[in-house]
Image (cartoon, rainbow, N blue to C red):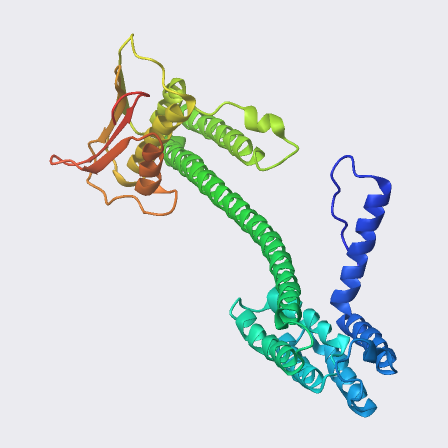
Length: 414
């Protein structure tokens, strides 16, 4: 069996460490082979009791004329049951108490009766506290019987010291039990903390997977929509305007390379050996012009307006990424669903209290984008909620679709 040594505190001496290791090995041996120790204890005390039965018992006996066979039988009844003292301490104490009653009642007063302390210790160690009351009910009658039957000395000299000895043994068992319970409680607490840490790690991993899925949806969905629009436009222009078709192909290549670069940056954070990938900047509000230019090349006319408050503090990078992704998602949905002849308008308003992004299109009213974990409207609302923002979207009365995002600035009411 392989055992793990417990780390020792600083300053522990060599002999002390050696003794602790030896004690740990003895405990491990006893846990694996309890019968060896139980048999050794029972054999040791049986041998001692039989030696005492050879004649030494008469030194403490009140009636030395007790038959030898009875003394031997009582000695065996007081020692052999010790083999089962840890598994059945109450039953062992009951057998030993019966033998003690005969011993004290006959006047033999065998000293082996004090071995009742061993099962009493195990009762205090492993049984409910009320079991000690039953133990007292077993121990007290032999003491009282011997004190009443043989009155050569005051009864309290026989009963009280013995009860005190039994009480101290019971207290020792309770103390050892309390220590074991305390140690078990520490182990359980350590296990619970370990489980909680594992749960936190799993939750963090799930949140990271959700974030990565959301980013991949926004990157792939948007860029593929732009590429599709460019490809359709290039196909129609190939026959009549080869120069414009070439421009479309060039734009497709540029968009594809940008999408691949964003995907490499995103997936790079999953690799421990690519630390530089995680340091690449995410899109910000300054990249909206590039985003809208790509959408225009895909065939969707977009009008972009900004209204900035010069006194307003800049948004944190994460909030800027949220605005960028919401605008990207809204324009992507316009490319997919608004139909031919649609036009879009993006209005970005920055004040001292918040930042608002309004994205509208004048195409046909389309159904809401597919809902999914980290996709479409759900993904946009999740992004807004991360910064205490709000997202409203729906069809316009005059036709088309609108998306309104509001992100409060820090230290301002949402």
